[in-house]
Image 1 (cartoon, one colour):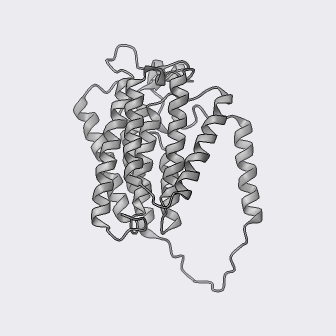
Image 2 (tube, one colour):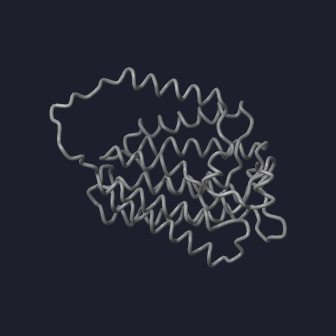
Image 3 (tube, helix red, strand yellow):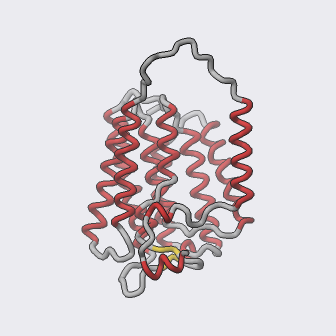
Length: 277
C-alpha cells in the first residue's frame, strides 16, 4: 500500500489514516481499558429531561474550523507541490485557523489545541516506528511526560511549544530520524511522546470538549507528513520531483513557530486563563 502511494500519489488524506496502524495487541489492550472505564465509572443521575438538546456551539465551531483547515492543507500539499509560496500559504492558513479555534474556546482552553497542531506537525517529520519492541520506551516516555505535567506546580505551555519547535529542528538535523530503524527515529519518537504527555498533563481546560478537540487534532494527517510519502524504509518523495525529506521538517518548524506566536496572542487576549501566566 505504501509503495503504491509512493508511485501514484493517489492516496488521499483519509485513506492515509489507515496506514501504519498500531499492532492488534495494543488495540486490544486499549479497547479493554476503555471497557473497564465504562464499567467502573458511576453514571450521572439525570434529574431533568429537557425537551431540547443543548450543544456547546463554540467548541463544535472550533473543531470544524481547525479540522477543515488541517485536512484541506494535508489534501493540497503533496510531494508534487513545488511552489514554496503555496506551501507557506497553506501553513499560514492552518495557523490562522488554529488561532481562531483557540479564541472560540473558553478561557485559555485553546492552548491545548495550538500545542496539538504543533505536536502533530513535529511528529509527522519523524519516521514511524515499525518495530513493536520500540513501543515500550515510547509509552514509558509518554507516562513520564504526563507525570511531569501533572506533578509540576506551574505548567509551562510556552516552554512546551519551544520544545516542540526544538524537536522539529532535531528532525531536520538528524538524518536518521527519517528512517524507522534508526536510533534517531526512536529518540525522536520518545521525545515526541514525552512532549505530548506533558502537554496533555499540564494544560488544564475548563470544558471537556476542549480536551477532546486537542486529542482529535493529534489524529489528523498534517501537512508536514503529506508533503512526503513515507515508504517502508525511509521518507521518500515522488520520482521526478524536487521534494526532499527536509520539507517535512521545515514545515513542522514553520507550524511550530506559528503556533507559538498564536499561543502568545491567546495569552495576551485572555490574561485570566486557568494556568499561571
